[in-house]
Image (cartoon, rainbow, N blue to C red):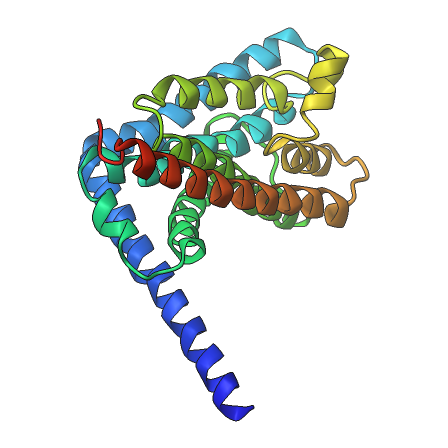
Length: 272
């Protein structure tokens, strides 16, 4: 029994090492591919201008309190890291000819994908935090100690679930040549259908229903309710978002396995 426990512990340590080291190398390669100036524009400047644009539009429309739009678009800005970062961290393995080397390793696919999820989630959290700070500094977002925790929890949950969706898109990129149109469409859908820039009550019923099963909507609603002083259920909202993250991560593993088998069978593993 002791030897079984030691063997399981060694496998766990080996898996975590694959996650940490492999994830760090993958994220470093992603930043190198983008170049620091382009990375700054995509992850910092672009989300900032998105926050400013929709916050000012929302303020002049008068449909909601200005803080509603500032905090909503600030958290949604983390989708840039989750959608583009996570998808490219997986799909670029094929584009740059490293996919075969990755797949022949004995490392479990779970640990490999987890290593792609964590760095992009952390990146998304950073983008969301900077977005909230920018909203406070430039747009007058009211920040009190009582709402910092729910906003932080919302940023963590939203970034994680969004990165899970990005992994699915990246796994599909191992089978199909160009997934950029999918990432662009997914980013726009998350901007519209999560209640970040448009109150969900103003959207059609089917969009409101869709918002319950896509990333970010639950977390954004929690942050907006906290800022507005409305009652909210952190356990329910954060729990729903983390469940979505787990589901998306599981789907990404299934899609990765399926794409890998099809690519091997059809001889398109490294076709770009």
